[in-house]
Length: 406
Ligand code: 7TS
Image (cartoon, rainbow, N blue to C red; front, side):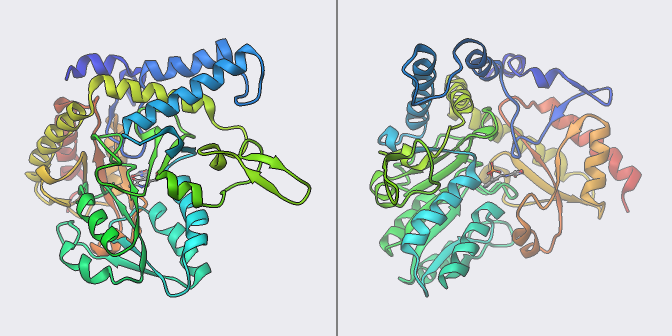
């Protein structure tokens, strides 16, 4: 992979922050955007902007075609069986809420169980809490080991026939753990449960094929994969989506509206009420083309190399401890604590040197509590990061340790 050429595609990466060249190590929160994505969106606004799915005129037809074409590209990017299985949402969070509010309300009954894991992001916990409270259902958590793996040895006993849904992250945004989703899906299906995969940290970073593992729902966000904000994806098996009631009501999602009732549009538009974020959808299509052009396998390998190097460089700093699995069993996130220094102080000092990392609980408070922590610092890598940037992180942390360490 030619990282220098890739970096030239991302205007933000040549910025200076506090008089230092930017080192952007927070792509797990949201990635930077390459020129083809920026240009695709600007082209819509300048050259053919009009609302989709309604105009009988050239601009609207062109915008509709481009938006629906982006859906096709997303469908093939994750190997969906068809375009009707790709529902555009705002982000991963909205995709998961869509399933909780529609499939969940129609299928979860008092006494049912929803199985989550101890490493979920808040957006794959809170929607299920709301559903469970409304329905009198129960949440059950598959525990993790101290080094950040799922306790797969406990899965069979937790899948007790009461579990109607398993919702699991493909990759932890804190530990970096890549979970054995294929095995989880097989076991869950064997126990009669439906499986939702939170792929917010997976689809941007590795090849993902919804047919293997054969999951029922899969959610991800455009903004973490070089696309714009405001666009995300819910993949759902056609038969499940077909049977689900709609989520939001309004224009575009209907077939026919009477005074007292309405019937629904075909998939996937049944779940896309109102004017969709079509410019952002077109931007996401461009992001998918950009990532595919480089190759997801190559991106994953690049991040594996950087992660291993970062773990090697950081773990020799006295008093620094990285949480989660060894390098060869994780994706490109490295969260750590350092000599009792508050993570916000570390992040602030790194920022003064132009290095952007995230500090806090990373929207995974229960996970941090399980690990006996309140907060960590997290560096996360993407296709545009380099070993030199890891060096700058390590060198700056060394100075932070000397200044603030106990
Ligand atoms: N699931 C996982 C595993 C995530 O990492 C995130 C966002 C989400 C769901 C929610 O995505 P959204 O696009 O709907 O917000 N994770 C992070 C993060 O790690 N730092 O900021 C956002």
